[in-house]
Length: 355
View 1 (spheres, rainbow, N blue to C red):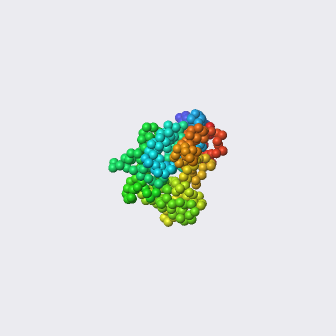
View 2 (view 1 turned 135 degrees about the vertical axis):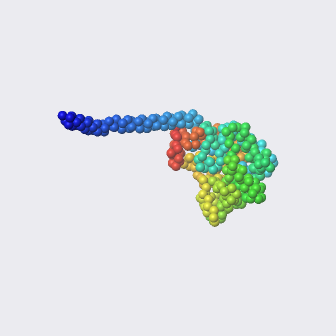
View 3 (view 1 turned 90 degrees about the horizontal axis):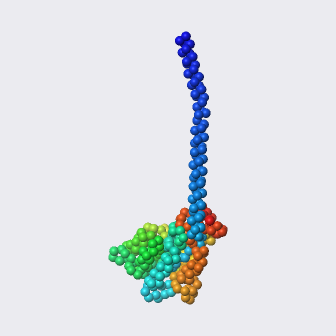
């Protein structure tokens, strides 16, 4: 009887164990369903969050009338002196007044390198302006004995205006030649370029000797540009991103200004700038041409400048505000009214924000 009891007990235990094992798959199924439901819920929540974020971005872009396919003034300066002797000179008073106007009308300076590479990181509702200086004149930049820009130089004036107008970035692009702000030794020249670079300024190539490139053979064009490139990189070991053509004259083949090799120097620029004429196109526009970016000469409305210099063009952009570049405040997106979609460059479509 005892053996029988033990056998029955064993049978019962074995049966129960079998039933338990048989039930285990059925018990894990709800857990798998719960996991799938949780994953689906998370995905749905993430999608809803992204949709809400996109809706907010579109609303914000529309609110400020963002147009990142609009035109950008690239202003060209040379000397800033009390007694101008050429049509390219501006007095410190004239330069200061133009900067004040830019600040008051919502412009924010960006460098030429930032412009051509599409890194236009400015607040929503504001407009980029590219301030450029040619020929590295001492009137543009010089330092006193303690490393401070000398009064009445262009850099000092730019910093003064920026202090009075928070958000107005004190940056610009200097297209340097061997004159190098009047400094004779490599040490002095390196000091000047290092200071500018460390303060956020941009150093661009203007060729070493400022020779007209029009009509010259390919090898000579490359030699002139490479010499300017080498001049900069040997002083600060920072490669220029853009070139400003001497006299605004393009070589016989425009591509030679953008890319080339001479000796041990190769250059491959993001943009080549001309000497004047009109506002520039947005870098996100399909019509943007890095081979010949126009600049605007700084000058009052008189003579030829009644239509084609800085005061005239700034007046035009103010009256035609829908034509100028207006930021949405997000450097990761390219915002514009939906009807302008045909003008969007395909390579930037992943950043497109059409409202």
